[in-house]
Image (cartoon, rainbow, N blue to C red):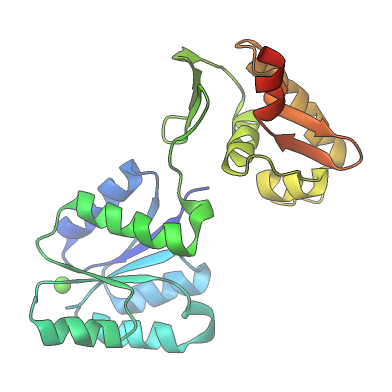
Length: 235
Ligand code: CA
């Protein structure tokens, strides 16, 4: 799942630079050139994080941050403030307005991405798509590739999502319903057996590198991803 990140910045070159970097880092950037338009986008769908410029035409970034942080639904959205000002009292004002972090212009996009990831890791770890390595199985969400000892394992997009979910939650048993909810997003027209079908496909893909035993059936419960059984069998 890509995190939706709203960028509120009136300098279009900076707005674009940030948006491109966020997109390349696996985020979904949303653009607003002032607080009023940002407010409109937030009403349509709550973003996962907001990057907010301090100096904006109309309502300032500080005022907007204060408003977002005092309002129920938007209170929990993390805010990173951007500013050309580096004086200490401004930084204090920024934090007082409820900002979660702070970057002074000019900043490197890489630094901004690192700050975003740090905040999301803390507040919404499920939105961070970092590569996962378990034993010799390596899953990279940004390239959608799974490798075992450098050999590519091919699979469909649903099997990829399924494996990604399992690798983020190893050694835990999940019911078919829970898996449906997490991987398919709880669409009511899909039934439990769909999970079984895709688990079988996933095992078939993994079996090309001898890893089919990573996905285990727990009788009466559901499925889990575990390297234990696999290690035992290979010894
Ligand atoms: Ca500005």
